[in-house]
Structure formats: C-alpha cells, structure tokens
Length: 226
Image 1 (cartoon, rainbow, N blue to C red):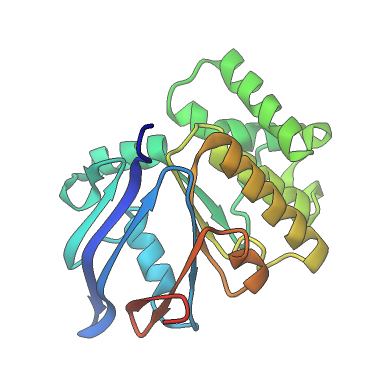
Image 2: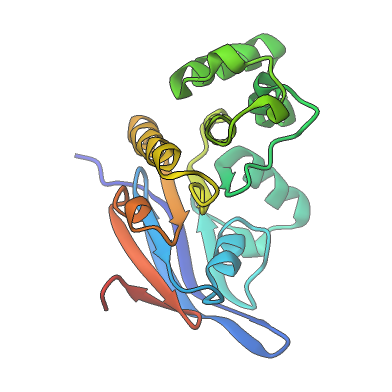
C-alpha cells in the first residue's frame, strides 16, 4: 500500500511586517487529498500564511514546499509557472473576470497553460456540469447569484487538476443554504480528485468538512483545542 504524498510542507516559517511578527515558527504538512481548516481570530496571520503557502508572499525565514518544490528558492517565472500548474484558489468575493463568460472564466487557467481550445471547452463543460451550472455557461458573472459565482470559482480552481487548493473564507459571502451547498461540493470534489485543501474559515460548519483543524493565534500555529 502506497503512502500518501505530502502536497504541502511548511517548515519553520517566520514573517514580519514593520518589525511586527506576523508568523512565528509555523510548520505543518498536508497530504494528498487531505483537507485542513485554518482558523483563528482576525489579525492572527491567517491571510499572510495563505499568501506564503501560495507563493504570493515570501517568508523571512523558513521554507514552503508544494509538491516537493521549494517556493522560497524559486525566481518569479518559475514561481508563476508552479502556481499556474499546481495551485488553485477560491476567494470569499469570487474574483471572477467580469468580461468573460462562466465557461471562459473556467477555461482561463487552461488557456494560461496552453491547453488546446477543444480540450479547454470539454474540461470546462465537464466541471460546470459537476458543479451544477452548465446551463449558465454563456452568462456573464454579473448575471449570476452568489452561489452560482462560487460554483464557477470552484470549477475554475479545479479545472487544471491542481495538487492544492487554497480557499479563503469561500462561504463568507453566502447565505447559510448556499454556504452549506458549497461546502458539500468542495468536500465531494476534493474526495473525487484527491486534491489537498487548505480552508481559511471562521465557520465551524466549514471546519467540519476538514480532516484536521489548526488555529493561528498571534502568528503561532496550534492544534485544534490545544
């Protein structure tokens, strides 16, 4: 029986802004297909940690490895390529491109990777079917409900088969029914694809779909309940 593969390794990460420590000696490992909830009060460093995990920010000390590659040692081009190939992102406010249709938004990561047009369309259509909004494929984001926008964002995050999805409060802008539906969708899709998920959330309901929960307090990572 093969052992699960570490998708993300965070090793002794420190980060400060204006001499103010934001992350202090943060270490964790996430395996293929594992969902991790990252909780903690506002200002505890959750978004900074997510930005370091996604290669948007660089730690002052420590290392962040995605699929075995150290983001902190990469130049800008290599980092951009790794982010395009290996990472997917889901945001609280969706971040869809307003001038592109739903289908074009979902195809966009594949366009950046040079995937041929027919394959892009087929893969986008398959995922839009899976998330339940294939009938909205040619609509612009402005014509969608919040729940539909987040379904589109999930399809976009998964379309290029990333190793890791980073989700920042993905239900924070949705009502409770849509939020529950989005969580169920994230759980089932990450199970199906064995995609790892880091889910930043204030929601106990969101944390419940995860295998583990950790908390940040003043930049220090704690096991849930510790």
